[in-house]
Amino acid sequence: MTLTDAAHALQARHAWEPPRALSAADPELADLLSAEAERRASGLQLLAGENLATEAVLAALAGPLVDKYAEGYPGRRHHTGCAVADATELLAISRARALFAAEHANVQPRSGTSAMLAAFAALLRPGDSVLAMSLEHGGHLSCGSRANFSGRWFDVIGYGVREQDGLIDLDQVRELAKAHRPKAIIAGSISYPRRLDWAAFREIADEVDAYLVASAAQITGLVAAGAVPSPVPYADVVVAATHKLLRGPRGGLLLCTGELADRVDRAVFPFTQGGAAMNEVAAKAVAFAQATTPEFGAYIARAVEGARALATALARTGARPLTGGTDTHLVTADVSALGVTGAQAERRCAAAGLMLGKCAVPFDAAPAAETSGIRLGTGAAAALGLGPAELAEVGALIGALLSGGAPAAAAARVRELLQAAGAKGSR
Ligand SMILES: *Cc1c(COP(=O)(O)O)cnc(C)c1O
Image 1 (spheres, rainbow, N blue to C red):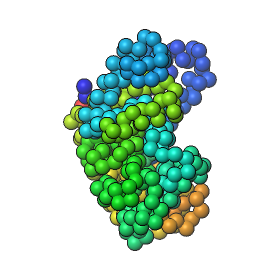
Image 2 (image 1 turned 180 degrees about the horizontal axis):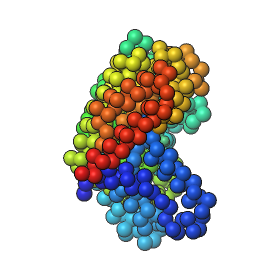
Image 3 (image 1 turned 180 degrees about the vertical axis):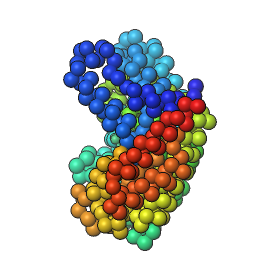
């Protein structure tokens, strides 16, 4: 099995047309999807968490398991007719365990947030204290937002990064852990572009007898390819996602020790979910297999090298990449020196077909709706075959746009880059 050729995938998406069954039954919705296909093909996707699912993954999603009800786990279902569902889930589990060298995998969570909810349910009781990266410094909302179960039902204490270099302050993590004695420490972020020191987090967790949970949804594909250190040998539970760098279906994944397997499984079903989406489980199995191929390794290397080139190019324009660069597919940059807010930067780039996100930077003085920064990810670009040379150019284009350059010229160049990506892969 190989990854679908980048250009083929791109062309298939450019040419997407609603199947007749859909356009006949529901022309209104078919039109909406056609508009989305056009939007998707008209720009370069640089949002950190979005990617392009592979054609094989899309095929599995649309396959016959879409109809199957299979509450429970293989061999222990609440429904009849589950032999194929069982075999499919066992295949997904064994592939996930092998890919991540994990003792146990649960492939049923519907999203990263559902997986985190189950991790909390497996290890904690409401009211327990948890130490996690603060939202202002890059923590996900499932790691302590007051608007989310985590911040509402748990006592979440936040750690952050150092102002001088933007790196996680492990001394602060240790001090807070000793002061608050949390039941669990969560390591991981939606925007931190550097490798995490899992061993150091494990050491701190052990010092205060806390569980260590890795919030690794953003970097799941990097871990699969060995491009960043894996949290699996260190964390009690790893919360992962299959739709980001992994190019699988929208969904979550839990990895844990054998000792916690039963608790984690019961926390997913029946505690926080009903029947799993078996077509998503099938598509996850496909993504896990594709992640072992040399093509996947090359794509991940392209994403990381592309991000590095993008950060360097942005720095040349006067934007300030946080932490000075990146070890991952993520680039977070303060753009205030260019005289724009994050929200203005997002709008200007969108007008030129460059889809990136505004992002609060640590110690941000701008209002939350504006922010001082932007966050970019190179996963979708790398999936289209774009590498460091193209992403360096994208960085320069962004700098020009933020310094007042006209969107029309940049938009024309973005279209050329996308067309070249198509031509390159069709050889
Ligand atoms: C993307 C992400 C999530 C949430 O994933 P959803 O599937 O949108 O719920 C959680 N944590 C981190 C670190 C993420 O990057």
